[in-house]
Length: 263
Image 1 (cartoon, rainbow, N blue to C red):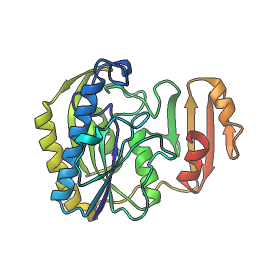
Image 2: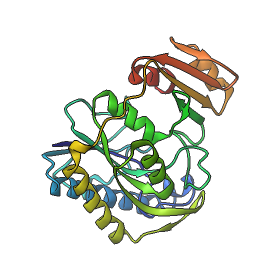
Image 3: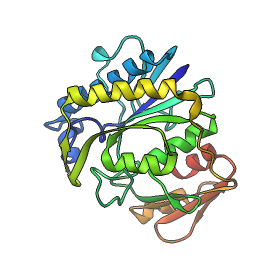
Image 4: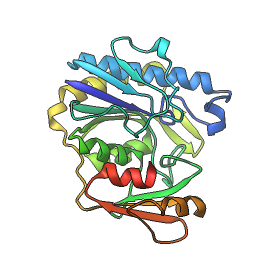
């Protein structure tokens, strides 16, 4: 079984505070990178324990240099650096996707570091008229290649979001928000053990999971934080501006409409 692991930083074990705390230059940046790398290595270990034949990991946060390559499990391959697509490297040759370090969508009332793709540029996203976060977008993009999600790890509200969308997948809540920028966190050794076991179960259950296939024609709608971004995007082919900050696009391919509004 060939496994793709999508990662983000906000939902990793122990990561809390504001973006200025854990992004490059922040006082928690080095610690956050180590903690995320530990989560990822636990998922890699579990995937191989479950029978994976190949594991590819995408560094999915910001400029994509969050995972420490020198501390990364050498059995897997890491995609890092500025990517051309949201799920860079994913294609139909993969059998399963695992998501490590997930956070909940923008506006989630009990979530940690809530946002969807950008906490400064995007306020809300809808797919087929339903609010959607990064977990849902990843699932739909992976579904284009018939790749299902079998595991989501992250903050507790992200886990609830994943279960509501994807059903009986494997999940691990590594922390629970007490406010938008603070959380009760598991000790890394505890969360890493849980992630390893959950990844192993996910790979062993791989044939049980179904890819997310939104109804077609699909409609993706994005509410940007500023009207100038909406104006710029609305000039792209297929984009329709419906108010000052909101633009939509319809089509039969999630890859195409995603690229119009979010590429």
